[in-house]
Image 1: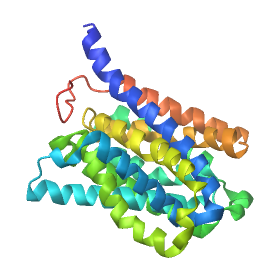
Image 2: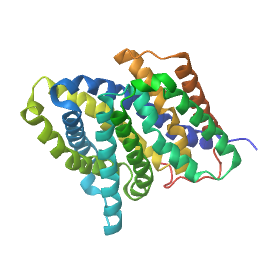
Image 3: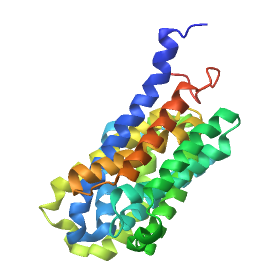
Image 4: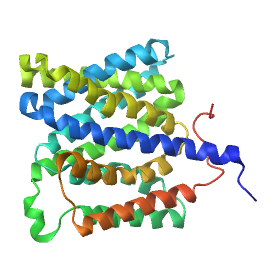
Length: 295
């Protein structure tokens, strides 16, 4: 039985959105690191989410979303998870290389993929992703160079990422991309006080504003809108496994923008992760239904 062009397009469309979102968010992370000397990771996160919430408020008009008491609770958890994920990830970047931080953060979506798996072939892709993850994380003598607090922040971001995936699906099922705008606004309200207390008036530095807007677009407004669309068209298992390619984007962005060079083992890790993502896409169940019908 051949796959119809419409069916193939409906499968590739959300996958393509995820690839664009991941490239955007990792490029934005590299740009954001240039703000750390002035406002710190806390202030950078606050500026990113504040500007992103304004952009998404204007573009997506979230006030049109239809919320019940149950869906509002889901959106609040989604927004807080999004804010925590951003904040903890940037805190980890103060002392952990971008590629390694993303690899540690990936334990969140990987856990979602493992929990949601039901077929033997799914575990093949998960095993490949785990191998890649282990190769990305320095072992033995090299591990002494990894800051434990920074690694802990990255792992905490992974927990928030898992919650973001699970609650993002539920929230997106009700209001689609408008949920992304609501989530970012809640995340901004959650994180902004921390950034304001830490950075104070430095947040108003004029030279930071264009950079902060760029980070907001690349790291939040664009990728989270695209991810919300993808979340509502892919099952949690597939979304979580496909996100395994995120460390590869992080490592490449670190190399291109932050001059963080990779070892042969780390490039091998990227290959394993890409194979896991491709395998998960190719073997996606044709009967798996998205949470909402594709447009």
